[in-house]
Length: 584
Image (tube, rainbow, N blue to C red):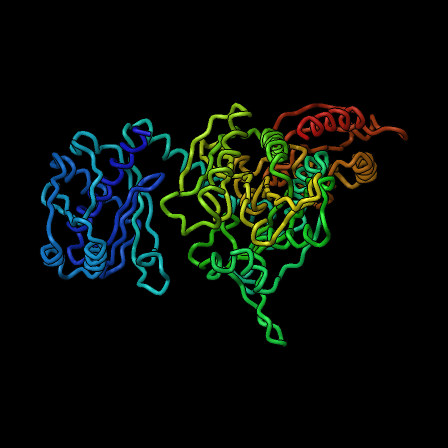
């Protein structure tokens, strides 16, 4: 934790240095805010004339020149009038100063060299010696205060580390991430598209991409089915009253797509599924003998995200949840959580992801953000902590990160580039059963309040696929590859044997294509390699000569360029099936 705090101070200090360098070249620019981020820092400016990424190198060079003279950060405390006088021509800083004064907080500037800036603090002690390993990365547009009604500013992104090695590792990671960008690979591999006529944030899935989605969803369903889940189906819209009762209307009212019916009712496109599932549970009386009820459904949800925040599959307006809800007694929570925990670990192990655990808890100092009482939250959070301890999991606690209706166990996956992603989640809901009066009749004939567990394995399939595409660089394991084998007849006289080989493969549920294009073998191999197909089966004169009425001989090559030599087709099929079953 201390190391992270020091890194944040370093990066915040780098943001000051960036602002100082910018003001050297553009004295009329108005600076706004410059925080540290998880991966670096940025500073937003209002420039009179636009700048480009070509300008970053000179700004970075100026940062290095100025940094050599920065011995410390000097704190200067002022009152409101003094602060406003210091930056009288900067309406952005004036707005911040007025807000700080309204809260009754102290107002301070920090000075290094000849540059000073409005700041609460949090800097390194010796910038001249500590602030050496940084890099400016890019420029982007950003609305002031994140509000699209405000002016668009210019945001300069950078990063900084304590050592040269850490910086170089991160810069390598960025370059590698560009090559693996799921938006780029998704288009090249023909998995999904976006259409201006359909709208931003609304991905369209091709046959190959749909197959990929279905393979993942089928895998999750297989794991859930083994543990007693049942599929349900709900509509994509609901009356306003359902979400008012659940509390989602107030929480998500600015993110809802709303629909007015001809008879005056107001509906919403569903941003989540849990309130609908409560109505299935509550449709008939439930006995303790019926418990638990485990419902699962993979279905699209919709949220009216701001256009500027949309990003490929990572943030969209229509997303697909592999959603499940368990309605159970309090005495059954541990067992049901444990089953979901096991599903998550089996699923992510298949992709080579290691998982860390984060307990997302409520902020007791901000109870207005949550449903329920402090006592209810105490009991619910004890339950999730007990489970994590029972599983011998190392975990961190994230206060304030809980859902508004209950605490969460979030699972963090590390991808092949060392980036951490929040993936699966288990949430204990103590509030929705209260809202919808969900209960079962217990052994004594009494009404017993139940609890509700929310469980998403992939979460959003779109977002999970964006992670998976980049994790694998599009080189999916054989069991997951949309096309597992491409058969390449060298000439027309080999087509009949190629078709026979394709049928033998397809009869064993191996996804196969035959490339009959009028191209050279080298061109066909390059095409399949670019499409990252795991295996290429080549049939030429030698294979034709060795083939008989009952069998086919093939030459096999991998996408990595390894020649597996000549194989009898059933021998190849057995090897392939063993590999596929190993991954599954």
